[in-house]
Amino acid sequence: MSETALGPAVRAAALERMRRERFDLLVVGGGITGVGIALDAATRGLSVGLVEAHDIAAGTSSRSSKLIHGGLRYLEMRDFGLVREALRERRLLLTKLAPHLVRPVPFLFPLRHRLWERPYLGAGLLLYDTMGGARHVPRSQHLSKRAALRSAPALRPDSLVGAVRFHDAQEDDARFAVHVARTAAGHGAAIATRAAVTGFARDQAGRIVGACVRDDLGGRELDVRARHTLVAVGVATDRVLELATGRPQHALRPSKGIHVLVPRAAIRMETGLFMRTEKSIFHAIPWGADHWLLGDTDTEWDGEPDAPVANRADVDYVLAKVNSVLVRPVAKAEICSVYAGLRPLVAAEGTASTARLSREHRLFAPLPGLTAIAGGKYTTYRVMARDAVDAAGRDLGRVRPSRTHEVPLVDAAGEVDALVAADAALAEPIAGTRHRVADAVHACTHEAALDLDDVLTRRLRISIEVPDRGRAAAAAIAPPVASALGWSDARAADELARYLRLRDAEAAAEDAPDDATARARYRAVLDAPKGV
Ligand SMILES: Cc1cc2nc3c(=O)[nH]c(=O)nc-3n(C[C@H](O)[C@H](O)[C@H](O)COP(=O)(O)OP(=O)(O)OC[C@H]3O[C@@H](n4cnc5c(N)ncnc54)[C@H](O)[C@@H]3O)c2cc1C
Image (cartoon, rainbow, N blue to C red):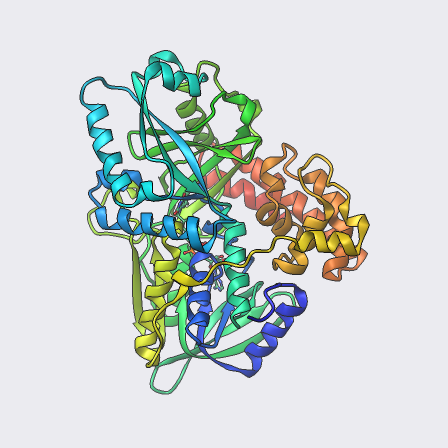
């Protein structure tokens, strides 16, 4: 296995390879699906290049509920195949591929109706257990009302008549995706972030033979050649396929989901909470030792596929949902942060609500030499990657079967300590957080972070966990990050200003009454001339 660290020099080398080599496969998009594809293809012996427009997991893959789950609600939709497949993936990840990144998490499902609800839900959970759920997490368990309130004293006694406890699994989505990317790099994939596909190359027969890529740090364009190109750009699928085909595309129907982070002390419970809503489900998910992740929502999104933001109605909905069952309501002032993501749902004729759209993935083959994949869910990324590479393999010919079911993800334990051993100053804590300066430097030298937002939002999560959204931390880590990434003082000052502006833009949006106003406020703050 080659080097798995993804630092700036490795990015430069990857771009150099992209300039010179003709890859078997070019992957467009570095969300969980794209990095999963890179790993699947590289471990089959294919030469692989991957380009990501922003950062690894900058899109939906850092904005999910962060659950590796069978999908209890899909049982109700009678999507048994999807549940079985997801439970199999959950087991693989917990036991073999990523036990260092995925852990079981308990949920309480309060019952509201006497007589029918317990047997109905009990049967569903029995199916969940027997489909594979109970082999690697504790079996589901029925609780009396009194026992339920003992483990969740925050719940209003009149909000339940009893409960069922069950387990799913949890990970840090952005961090997990970086580990997949690093593992792919270790198997030979060339990975470059801040490298966006702006067009596709065709041969005389009309076959796609590569893509035009903009290197946003080097300010150059390069033509990357590949025998097959696989597009895994989530909600940007229509936009990117339009670049290839020259025709508007309508394959996706994105829906927005937001989460609200509140301190653990705001809700006295020893377990997560899982509730049915009119449209879908609602979770309170333990996040680290100090927070709850509350959400999510499911609303149609008709804006641009980048930078979704929450609005006031979204936040009010989440608070109203959780407060409807709590003795002591969570106040708006207790909110640490809010984040929004877009589900890359595949459109289906005649389905009115996005909550009812299938979470299955779909492959598209719009042109010879080009395949796209969209839909699905984080939990089943490995299956999506396998199916995508199988499809490309039919075009490439003589491609070995997938073997990612036996390839553990890189375990980076000890790397940060090694940095501290080499430079004791890095042991300094980042004030107000659970991290050391070394963690920020490590994000740049090993985890492909290229600016303060990559470090604070997607590697260390400081921007969502700390009430000032990481403003103080950004100022504290700017100098060591600048030195890890080779920035001048002026560049470091610009980067810091940009980080602060991003957080201001999010805060401005969160108080807007609707998506259109939220987006306008977000852009207005972000695009304002410097110094305003
Ligand atoms: C609110 C919410 C909660 C969810 N919760 C869960 C959950 O708990 N469990 C679960 O299993 N699933 C969950 N999901 C679903 C899951 O998060 C997504 O299915 C998954 O992250 C999609 O990954 P992706 O790689 O396909 O897309 P993305 O993560 O969006 O990645 C696409 C990437 O393509 C890049 N890109 C776009 N255009 C270009 C271009 N021109 N050139 C290069 N790169 C480009 C983008 O920058 C982006 O990084 C949730 C989704 C949402 C919205």
